[in-house]
Amino acid sequence: MSDVLIEEEKELVEELLILNSIVYTEDFADGTIRKHRNVYDWAVEFDVDSIKNRKSYPAEINEKEFETIIETIKRNEEVYSKMKIDNVTTYKANNVTGGKGVNATIEYEGSYIVVYKGTAGAKDWKDNEEGGYSNISDTKQQKAAAEYFERMMNKKPSYIDKVYVTGHSKGGNKAQYVGVLYGDEIEHVYAFDGQNFNDTFKLKYYSKIKKNNHKITNVSNEYDFVNILLPRVSGRTIFVKSNTSLGSKWEIKAALKHKIGGWHSPYSMLSPTYSLVYTGQNPDGELKGTDLNLNAETEQSKLMQNLEGYLDYLYLYMNEEDWRYLSNTIMTQMMNDKEKEFYKDQRIEKPKGFEERLASLSKGYFETNTDMEPEEIMILMAILLSDLKLSSYLFGGPKGIEFGIEKLVPREKQLNRIYKLYKEAPAESYALVTRDFTEETKQKLLSIVEEVENEHLLNITKWDVFYRIEKYIKGLDFPTNENELNTYYRKIIDMEDTSKEQINEIFEQVYATDNSFSKELDDLASKVNEINGELEKMLDRFQ
Image (tube, rainbow, N blue to C red):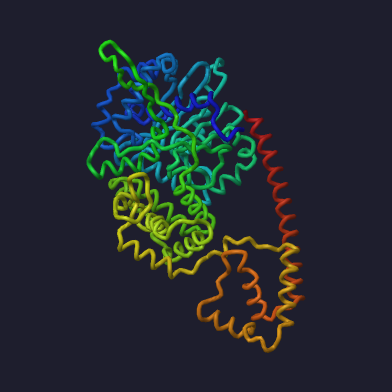
């Protein structure tokens, strides 16, 4: 599969992004969309002013942006008049405000497009959180998405020969989930800014992922902060340039919220094009908007690359208790105040020593994996340690992470506290160093033993007494790069009086353990494949 979108795909992706935008409107949530024969007829009657009257923008798409979406639909009657609303199913996603999640199926020229709306309320945020727990392979909402897909496939008319699945944000996660489980029935999955999956899911569905992930494409804004969560299963991940603004509500809090949310908006991946139109009334020409087009493909932003690597590292090395607290903290902060109050009994208490462990892991990661400036590192830590209150970090001063004209900057007091925490933390960089038990390393260690045994008695710089003093004064940190390894090995060998026999024994034990573990894994894989075979036979009998 190509790592880029081909021209034929781009047109489809643009249409899917528009569907993923309009599915956030109240007309889908309250079912009034069913009154219209198709998407075009709905757009003709849609009142863009209704966006202004909402407390928050749908998917952080403001009224001006939504007007552009509606105009694009209306200018392309030949496309959107063929998109017939086959089914809309909703579910209660918010215990407080009654917000609804949406699953929709649209018939389009002999194909089905199954669309899953993104997070719609506190229930969905909790479901997102549980998607990162090691004891959960399939969340409630993922299972519900699969049930909806099965129901649509069971009632699918015989003339429907292709099925596309799509969704944005949580909807993107659902779309990928369905793509893994039902890849045989699907032409392709186009997920937008979708959260990914935990290792338990990847282990459970290893064979299905391997078989179907070539049919899954995740398209994301270069600055999107959701597609970086958890390990990926998509066969292809594509980033496009960001098109975000502060919105048209020139009240600072609303503007900041729209800017942050805009990085995760489906509209942010589209841009209107303009052309000069000449008329008798205006012979000089005037700019007229045409259709929304997919933004140019690009690389993931440097910030999000660093943040993704950082979160992947925390996911890999954090203990379960700390990871659950972090996940709970992140998702709780996405809720509004009423939702937080409703779910306060499910708030996970901060584990003792969490901040110190986070600082230590952070230090181990950032000292060896990134060229970020110290201030930028502190800001990323501040976001995690301060419950993700992003709005209080914007426009805060000269130091920070830049996004065009904006800067992400924590308060100086908090920055100093985090810097002290980070500076004093021991770096757990050992987790990033490959355990090297090759024959080459073995011979290197044996030569160091020989060097230590043959060193001259009067060469005081090599005496291990100095290493022991160093150990108790500042500690013998595990080296963060290969150049320091030999010096480190020499100190340990000298202090422990390690012999060649001991080195040989260590390596022999490692090889024996490796062989034994490899055999156990092979046996386990064989048993799992055998069980899967029996389950598939049982499934065939029930179908």
